[in-house]
Length: 407
Image (tube, rainbow, N blue to C red; front, side):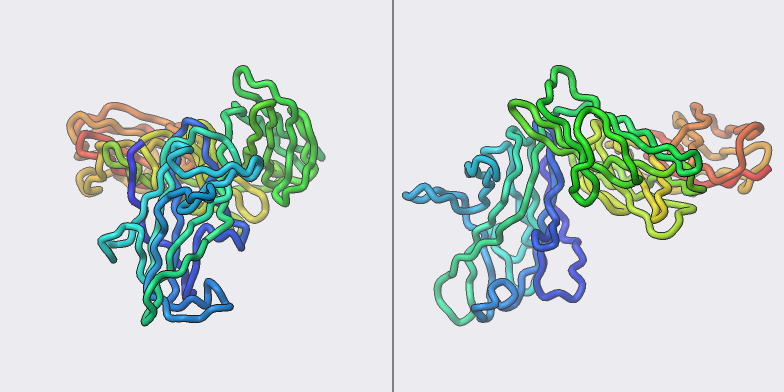
């Protein structure tokens, strides 16, 4: 995978010091998978004094520098150290197929040195080659104002899980309160995988059952842990909803494509008709959980999906959307769709030569498509009324417009 520098863009609000993910709040790095590309970011706001880091010692802080990886004469590991929480073995990033890349915003000639009072980031990226749950420790040297020398300090207890490819997928049967039926989850193991145990957990971490299938009493978000003789991996983010609810929510994804060979694509989900606050969970084409929130960054070329769940349990999934390379967004004014709203026909005018068009529902389903002429007419008879997307792609780029169909 291409190596990308992280963006310094986390909002710490009015805090004087902070890290994200924050181990104190139970946050962890995103889960990785053996032999699949990995990228996640540590954001850190450097304080101006040592007190927020160590309340027992107060002094003005000038800067901190992450130590280079080394093992001392007594076999102690220093630098950015990954400790397997099961075996207590210690590793550096390169031992696990990973690397740590810093962005100090040009504050100093040394990439791993960060000035007090400023925000920075470091990315963990690469292709993991060993499964496990790792505790990550960052050993730093703190340089104080008006005092010669440096003092060692450790940022500790960050967690990274790397899974084995044990799970092919999970089949979800939703509950229905109107019909009085419960939901269920059924795991399908990857080819050749023989599990010694399959255990299911709810969002609170309480085990709700074992075996390939489990009945769900209350809708929610669930996880499954698959154990074999060689590996144990936890897969999460499986949502069971109550299909008896009156749901009108819809969603579509706005994509910013990646540059050739880079992991700088992004996606934002736009949601209509939700009941109260909603959450969005993003997945790779293989079903690997990538993150949560209304947007996701650092996407390479490929296919992804997103699941949106609102406060009463309604959900909608954009099952597949593509991040492309080599296509840039072009001016919307280069083509038009009229009339808007439309009832019987929709005309596309000014389409670029050699382009293609697709008409999609807000959940990403293609209802009509074709190779573009200078002007195309889409017939709308038989289509349900509502909001649709017209997406045009050509060698110049891609562009999307929303249209309303009214009969």
